[in-house]
Length: 330
Image (cartoon, rainbow, N blue to C red; front, side):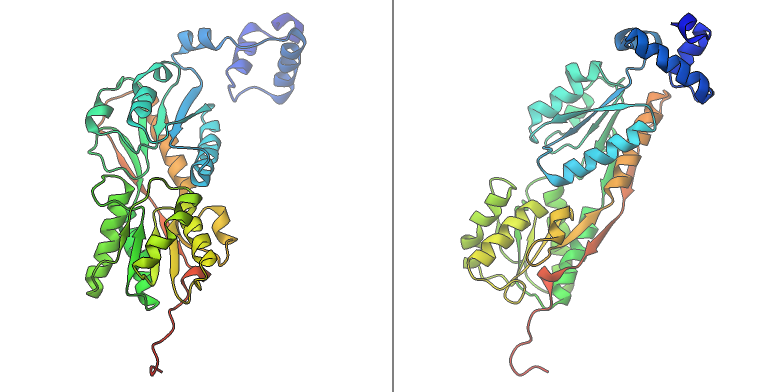
């Protein structure tokens, strides 16, 4: 190959390893020779020689959720800057699958793992192969057993609830938020309660769900309406869009009778009827920080797990317009 390209074997190696100090003319000659010879890099051999596979894994509950699809896109972009290819795993939020990702076969074939966990506890994380870098992404509250990139769910939920209070809502229901859990649900419920306590208002109805899809959101509307809320906060936007659809199908005027809000600010929320108020996380920063932590761990060295926070904002749209004033008020 070197002879065909008219360069040294070292130069061919530099091109194959994507070293930056190779001229475009030389790189083009080597790549042309690679194509002519139909050369393929032996990744297994490269991994043995360099200790690097060139792959990282991203494990999320499900790519069918637009939020995780968006996060995956940002991780792929950030990983490319470190010459990493991203392998996507879907866990369904199951403990057994998440454990398999961090301690099973996957961990032997990648340089690191980014896991959006919904089920693992601290003991599960500590049982993994510790030599494989791991970054936890998302909301699950764990002690510092691995590097963790998080968003401030408590503050975000408090701000979202306060927005609804500021529009005149007083009986605010929550859908899909389980206070007994240790995931985003509990943290968002905590922020919701904090805002209500600050306003001297009792909590509204809490409606449990079996899943977080649009069909689930639409199906729980009759039970929701029986509690007569004037606003609804949903666990995520997919669930919220289902609730919104169900309310409109039931003849409920949104937002005049019931306001609706969610979390994640997925693209479709700008196009629902009415457009949905939602908390937008800085997923691009979350992805970038996660990959950077993996890259730092891959370089070696011993240091305690780090925790990094990313930003958010409440995007106010038509689904939470101010409630009408009571008769006689001016």
